[in-house]
Length: 370
Image 1 (cartoon, rainbow, N blue to C red):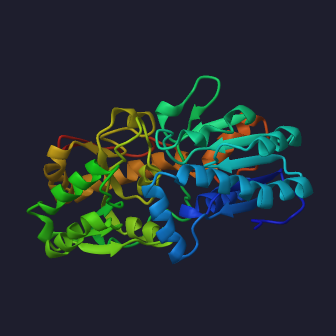
Image 2: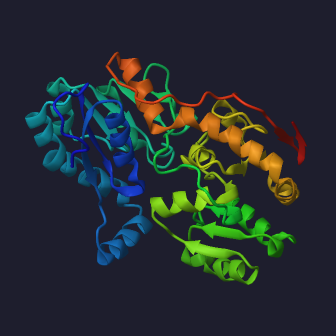
Image 3: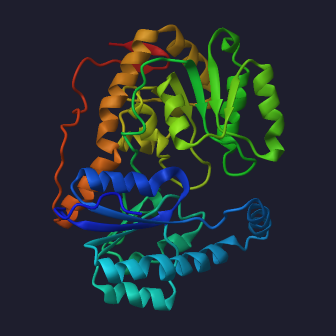
């Protein structure tokens, strides 16, 4: 799959990674906007209902990491190396890679093409994603705790600003974003259950985009009984539309990992929706708390939501400030940073908003100052 085919390009990149979450196409479009040719190669390990059932069993037996590694190396041999030899790109970008086989490691080293890796998950879940690091010229990690001096750099995933952008109408006062699982997302589940106990919930338009595991299916029924509209699992286009139609969006990070940054941490402000998220001090490295997003502890969630809903002007100001700041975290900006770091050409074709321009507001403990 090629994003563009003109011959007057600044460079050519081959991007290989998972077919999920539209990450690879989004990066390809960012390269295109900077004047590059982008060829995309995506893998999907599970493609049928029967395979999904088998995959669940494999994961339950904890055999999936080894199988994923083998399938990834087969994907490189069948899809990536032939294109590398025939197209001779200037750059190879591996999104969520796995440990390379001896043969594939040799092929990468002998190709002479600089390789970049970008993690989409914390390494605590599977350290083998760092397998190609020694052969790559740059390695970017999703979790700040995975940064290694001289080996990897903390640069969270960006978001596609052509997909996640402000909407014209607000359908939701509050939108809870994210899937609920029995493991790995206990804090998110606690926030969700606390939201269901909100006495003001029947008076506002509250929605939930996401699904729940079988063990938590009772929460779905309970949410509907409380008056919450459940949108279910949706594709990225529908997700972006739902967030863009929400005044306030709640996002809670994963439990495991040390400093993970969910990509929606930038995408939600990018839709000009006021972001409420679990309080984590390290997030201040990327956005300014109480000004560009609202960090909150579980016990203070409901008073904060009440304050935000009742003060529509102040929450709109927070959303506006978040939107301006999020423009520095788009995939366009991530790719531009990467090319600048490598000394490669780019052709930015738009002027982006500058964080901090315009009037400001802040929110601390439910009190707003302007």
